[in-house]
Image 1: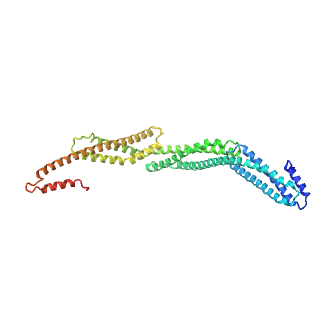
Image 2: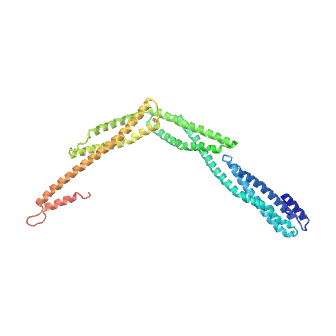
Length: 405
């Protein structure tokens, strides 16, 4: 008869061993070890089942929870291995106790524990995967938070240093500062999505109400405050650069000079267009040369215009005040006039090239016609019937016109 409880089983086994011949100390020790291994296994499996049924953590406590869970699974697996090993040893000792038939009941004592562990293992694996996925999400979230906080601290310090520098009112230093402003603005724009993502995902990791969750909420508050601070410092520095630009004499002279240049080019263009197609080819050729020169001057001015537009785009887009608005409008007019003049001049150049091609074709036809008349009058000698030297020279000249040199 097999006892219902492990304790009763151990007592019955010990009593039976004492009534048998031989030294029972080794078997007693193994039975007690098996009893302890069974107790440990039951306790650890109960803990594992409790964790499996509980809500999978998602916040800062995930690191310690995952490590603790994996340690518990390892201990549980070790206890089950001990149970199997001790049962095997007891079976080997059975030969020393031939009258102790109840020793075979050790299989019954361990079978329930082993079967229970096999059922738990599938559930434990599913729980482990969920915890691992949550841990990866948390680690990525924490990494993003650490990186953005580091960047915010560095950028805040850099902007504070830039604001303390004395700004030059010369155009080249201002252009260098604007380049730095663009780099910082690009970095801020790039991290807007990261800040938004961190704030949206934070609710998933701050629900536990633990000390770790409270610490995380404090870090998020600090991040958002520093983000607002960086954006504010960037706009303040933009305002300082805007003031420096309005005091920059080179900027105003460049704008005024480009306006005068474009006005002069427009006047020179209007002296040529509209194009009279009845003009002599030499005059058309001269007009073409002038327009090509005008286009060259326009293309050369593109770098200066692009520089003005860049400064205006960075510093004057949302500017207020009469001076800023006038400067922004002037740059806008310069850009539009340059674009329009380039388009018009290029179109007139193509029109002239078409007219010059037509004129050249007409001259070629006229030359061919004159040459044919000459060939008809001098082509054949009345005495020999062969081509004259003049005829040979004319044909030779025709082919020369098509040779590639």
